[in-house]
Length: 159
Image 1 (tube, rainbow, N blue to C red):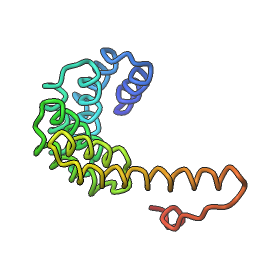
Image 2 (cartoon, one colour):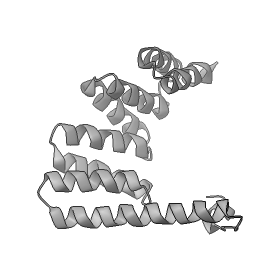
Image 3 (cartoon, helix red, strand yellow):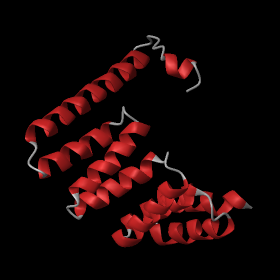
Image 4 (tube, rainbow, N blue to C red):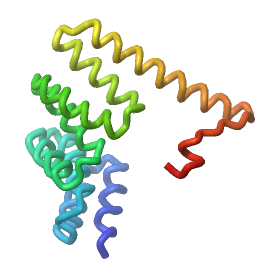
């Protein structure tokens, strides 16, 4: 049952039992070694357990198997930032940003990296992008709550 262990891992992760989650994701990986999502989740739980070396290894394996996994690029960027490898962090954030250009989290982490590099003006530009994205999201939510009808062309097109 291919997804059994993966789904159990998600349940344990949600419960913040990262050791059990990791065991389940490893079992799923052993059944389906080519599935990038297992490596992505293993990176996430390894980071939560404080094992940045394993997290980096798993995230790298995830993007090697599927370069479209924005969460793995983002996870790599966080690890690079913690280790003060700012150039690598920016490269990983560039990849994540290409996948999800409207991710406020990506822009915010990019602002933090740029600020750590002493690039205050560029960091300010990223924070402005975060504010804009947050406002757009808030506006959509307020419209939906007020009974208005927000029409997102991308959602209508099935994207």
